[in-house]
Image (cartoon, rainbow, N blue to C red; front, top):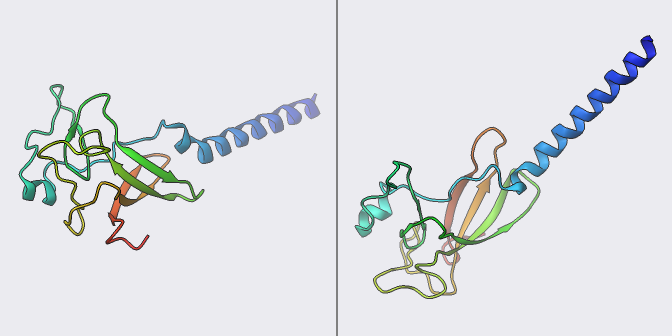
Length: 151
């Protein structure tokens, strides 16, 4: 009887350990812990460009904005990006643009780097670092465009 209880406890501990390993290493890749990769409308670049003063949805939630052209993205509009998985807690990401600025830039929309504030060509992109957190939402730090960033 005593041995059976020990075996059951051992199996429960192994199952919990496997679950924790799965959760820790695979959860960021399942998409459940994602945050919109955006800047708020009060950022320095959006004030300078004078675009998109109203950056909140009718229900009060902030909308996602494109970090390249600062256009407000509606539901169904997504950023084009490439994530280079390193297996560490931070990963390199190339942000290519949104439907307003990539592949064809709409009239009146400028592709500007938020770091060096120079024009980004149509084949250019932003370089960013993504930090995955288990308990919090992911954090994205834009390092610059492919011209001003060294990554």
